[in-house]
Length: 485
Image 1 (cartoon, rainbow, N blue to C red):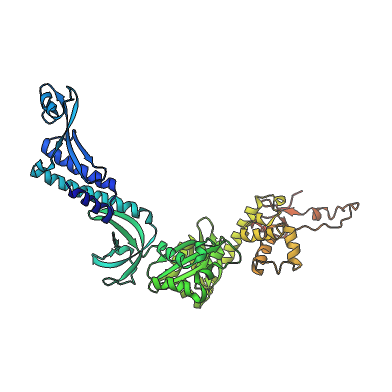
Image 2: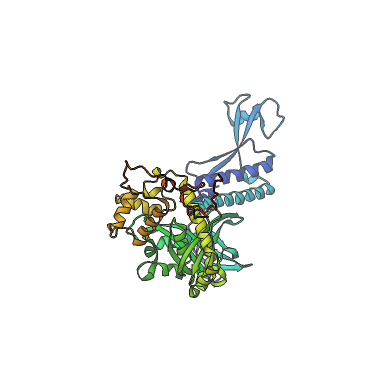
């Protein structure tokens, strides 16, 4: 078996198989042929030379006085001819020439060899590519069958299923294809990689290669939604205040995003800033449309109304509702887009009042003395609150005093709109009472005692007067009855 070493060298060096897997395959092949010839392989011993230049097959037999099974037993006299030192009960290995195996045994051995090598090859490929799921790979168009595109990836074959293709892309033979690995499949010839060019993660992987700020975690991709071949929306944020996440992704003169668009064959891409505030995020998500205002209809059901000008309505909706549909998926909100005229026909006053009442009632569950810092206010942007705290204005009274005196106009990292919003929330939820210089010794007359005592709402405790029919704070309806004497 002088050709054995050359065959092993070819399999290990040229084909890339491991030495252990080749040895195991050869051993399984010889044992299968042995079993086919002798009916069992329990006593088959396969031994390799240290330099892998040769391999021997031996039949291990027990020395007995009277043979019942000639495959596993040998007479003492016959054993003595092979070794003078053997005794009854000992085991002796008798070399077997594989060339003596019958034809059927050789055929079984070949089948076992092919099977073993194929399995070893599949395992090798699987171990090599199992960690590549979720990565980009480049191959070349090979053929198309039933709408599926088969890609030559070198060692393995890739398949780009029809459902994972972009409708705007057409390929010819030997065209270069860059795709995203979504799965691995074992097939008869080895391994097949399932590819995708429609997955949102494909866009994310390409963008990560183009934008260094994403690679160093300065810019974070919060979410990507996509209608493959038509439009993609990407929400990004930053961990550093001085970095513009949208500008980083777009790049100088739009070069970075243009490279991504070119790879997607001209698919439109909207890169927008992420926000924890749903009102701000919904406005951004409807880009490129300009939204005048957003009204939250139901927090629990996550429904909102976006109001735009007439000329922006078609842009906000998009072709076949595509833009607003992607915005819904990006924000996880159900967004209804209306023009100013359509919104005017709706009773938005009632909706706004109801929401204000809900905010008031939620705030009422917190004792007034507990709301002393900006971060505790209902509906406040926590990022803004953190920046105010860092600047030393986390206390509500200190903030209001500084805001009224114009001391916050140049506060770094905060816009005038954000400061104004905080001021509005404070005045909507916090009551400021000025100490009056009352004359403690003066006793109220009987005529004005009832007037100074006043009345309060039975629901929320707000101050009310006799001429009111509804509470100005919570909206509860009431009426005054005169006591009959």
